[in-house]
Image 1 (cartoon, helix red, strand yellow):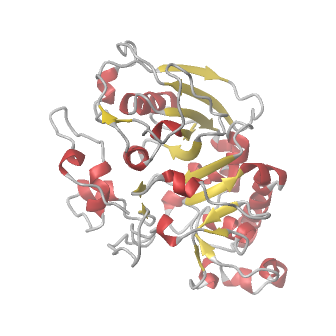
Image 2 (image 1 turned 90 degrees about the vertical axis):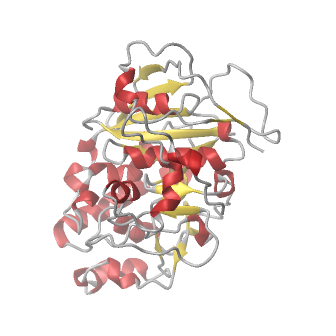
Length: 377
């Protein structure tokens, strides 16, 4: 049983900057540890948009954690989660983190690696302070992603939001994260977990598998690439020796040791270079992953990515849950639950996201999650 208690609103975020010398072209690192104090100097008024989350503690079955010990991003006993962090999707990211902690059997043994764009309007440092003010005891580090790393490789997409350089940060996790991080779960910002993240973390990536994700082999795979791709044997033969299946890159378990050894970042970039010249797909960051990994993914139970809840990439219309058990809800597509709720045009599934929302438009608003019961997978 996870024990829950609230901390005082009096907090200090102990934040310091360290250069990631191993990867000078990719990012800087803003490291943040849990702390106590009065919050002086951070302009705490600007953080009032998010309520402080409840503090979730380990249960008796969890490994013993020494009081006062700083948690290292290199600690292999932790569950490591990577997410992007930006001002546009911040409300979704906060809800996603909240859901992970709420359902984790050992929430103090989770470490978040956030990747923020160098030129985000809120700045990576402000985003880091917002996370700390909302989750005072969270173990996390913010990495500053240099957009010029990928900007010249991005081609136009079916939806402009898919052209955001930060969408491509997942391609560079092996370079951005500390070299000591061997394994990570990548999560999009528009997900909610309703199950214990440790279950997903503990899946086995067999043999030479680099990625684990739910596969959808009945999907029409030809739709993800253009006629120019399928009509050119020099391109389409990439799938000759495998049985390709669609998988969604918003939820992936990744072996970063194998990723780095296989130089997969460069393999993805090669296909992005082809796309710039030949127009072989219409979507954003997904197709290069399919070209490199499809047919060689460790299949994960579908319950870990109930995707498509945001509708299609054009209209973002409402969709119902797929049949079967649910461990993770994913609002992939144009429609995002926080936007539809604010516009007072929510879909039925958006009410499953709402209990994890920590956003408060004003200081007098009560947390909605205190009046709702979360969906249990």
